Image (cartoon, rainbow over all chains, first blue to last red; front, side):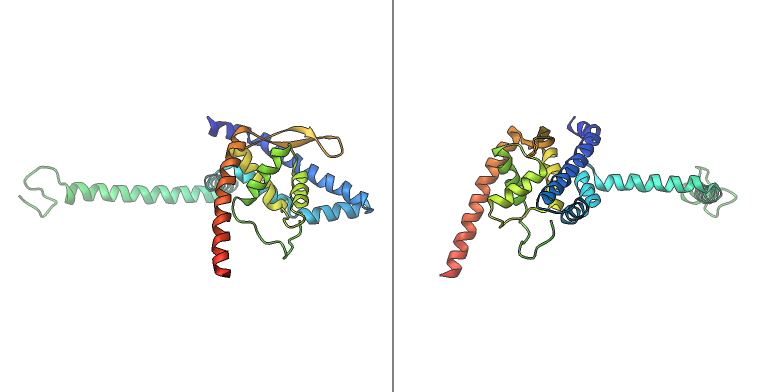
Length: 131
Length: 114
């Protein structure tokens, strides 16, 4: 239940986080302006002091995520997007895989019934093994 | 805040315990927390935003804090973090374990000095 809550509430958390960080910066800017800085200068100083906003937000959002799992899902999504963009390449890949897997399966099926587990006849024409 | 070589990194759990203790006094927002910790520690401790915000999210996730609408220093509405009952219990456990650790370290250092 807690996991579901976490999954469905996290966009609200993300919004809260962005607002909090923005308020943090705004307050610092106001404080610097009271100390006599111009708005532009104060904004620059506040941002510099705060550090990399996008990175801090991302690190904070990660607390609500399962980074390993979600990065695999993102990779898969990316791969599908790329394949959909180049259908020719996608078809070639699919065909190569299909023929490769098909040929191997066919080969092994014959090998299995001929050499590994032959049908229960005493002697067959196409094998050298006779019981 | 800009990294200052005079300020060394805190050990794990130290930031959390200070946030919890500060919020026990009253609900605060991020910037107020930074200022409060800096002020109370007489500038000895400086909380970096890069650690503060992830820590706050982690603590929200654990259920130690809850965010709600509060009042900023200027009197405007803002998002503040409030300590939950779970948070208070966690803080009390942590204080005991930190006390033990500090006592241990102090004893070892005292012997080394003697």
